[in-house]
Length: 429
Ligand code: FCB
Image 1 (cartoon, rainbow, N blue to C red):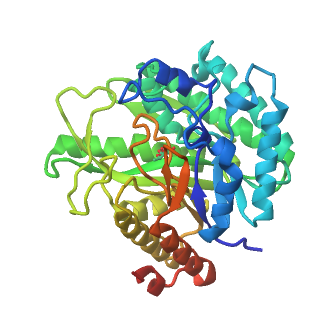
Image 2 (cartoon, rainbow, N blue to C red):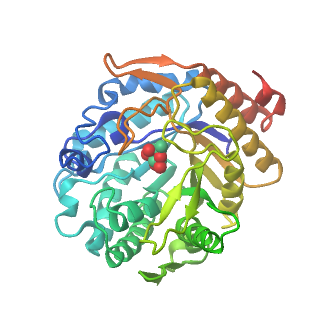
């Protein structure tokens, strides 16, 4: 029996409700955001307003909702699980079920309990069993109620940003540390997937993988082209290949390499989660550090978004195709635009929905599309400026206001759910 196409939205816990005891709160307190005074606090107050936020889902025609559970709330001290925090997640899933919305639960969306880093975090091999223990507590609470799980959100970004560039927690800049972290993250995914499938043989598990389109900044420049191909391998392909074969080959010339085999990796991924936003241009600038110069350019004159990202739907097409080449169905776990001009969000939605519909017509196995995001939220290093929501959040009152793009999203959903996307609906004003 084929299950219906999933049409919905994605959020992450920290970005909509904050968390006092996690590493991101500590990162903010250390003044590490772009505006050092920025604090997430209660974010959009979703911890209080989650029921009414969930009631927005049927109004946009969603039949699926991706959200994350916050590790630091559930396991505030190593091995001590907060039953009240778990009960909140059960309540949430039950409300989604009553609304006819399929939950897609992310176990780790960038944040960790602060204690996790005390003895090395992902650099420590013990992280694998720690993550599995956490997965087991969540699985025990939600099993039978949740079918689709995302173990890790964007592990490659976590490794690049946290262990090579030092932009996000834990702020390391060391290839050896990055290589250790990558291997432990992959093994932690496999261990968590085993726990989830043991709890429920029907569980479907995947990783949400961020993909970017890569291009040479100077198209005729050989070094830029080489760099762009290398970026594509490291950032996009290495993980996809590992999912398909079990072999990870991740290397940076002049820095080092991480080559390892995780035999159970292919079987642990039932789908590929794809987070797609943009295209980057790489420019060789002398001796590149581990992360060279990258730029967002407005080459197609569509305009950059409020986070400065290029809108590039063509890259979405390629990312879908390449994800599916792993031999697994693709679930779009994120796609969206930060803009305070909602008409740009509507154009973005139409253009990306068109790509999605063409890919499906071409036979690519796509399980669903989850738009980022339901409501405006706290955007990591940027804070509250970028507006990604189908609903606007007024941060002075926490009022939610529906944007016109929410109507378009619902109309597109009707097309996708009824006949696999009619181009007429996509072209509606
Ligand atoms: C993705 C993250 C998500 C959100 C969007 C804009 O990389 O997974 O949390 O910040 O970018």
